[in-house]
Length: 193
Image (cartoon, rainbow, N blue to C red; front, side):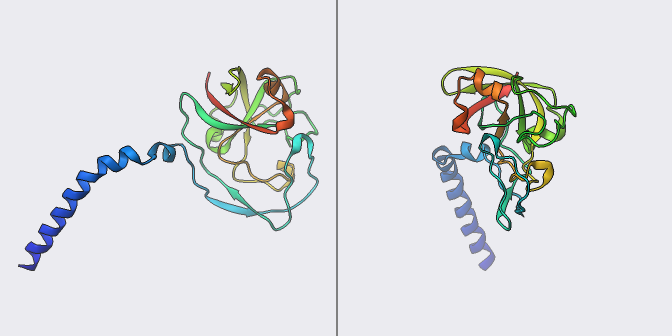
């Protein structure tokens, strides 16, 4: 007798859930969840010889910095934050490009992508199209990773790990988009070329 009562209550609860689920999905901003990437941990900051060009944030001793192993899914217009980075030797970009082992002058349109988007180098030397809110767009080549897992060391200019949604563009990318480099970061969208 008790088993039958439990089965009826369970059946009623499942029917009620089935009735409200479509309404909940229609009103809940579930698309925002598809665009997100959750942190996977953090690292403890260590200061060092940080080149502050292009308003680079330098690590502070003992401060915790969030790390990401993923990036939001790539779509036809993936939302991202464009940051400014020099890929020239001795500047704020750190070491040579991980895709080519070389440096690039500031007048070359190149970018680094957050770890998830860089996809273990699978986007190396691929072109992407970057679109600014002012209506301008530019094509740039992926030459490096904006490391979202590591930072606060010499290899990373003693800068914190990148966020999960970064397109780190050379000054030439910013110029082609008609953006003010003093802004440091701006919202953009990008897609595969």
